[in-house]
Image (cartoon, rainbow, N blue to C red):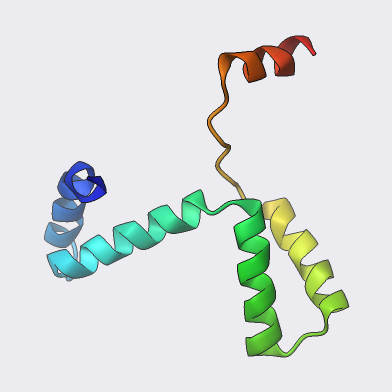
Length: 90
């Protein structure tokens, strides 16, 4: 279970901040969700946010998304040994 693996981090965050253990747990899970979001998930989420919150037209949203994506770090999917070999040797 994810929470069991994160228990030491959650406890440390709760002990070193004014957060309760439950608040610390939510913060840790939010950070993990942010860092593991795929580019596709990010684009869909941000498009919705920019459309609803800022009322931007699609052209402005697409321009903004392109800029945001260039600065964002995304986790990569787990690659097989075969996929890794293809990356290296073509």
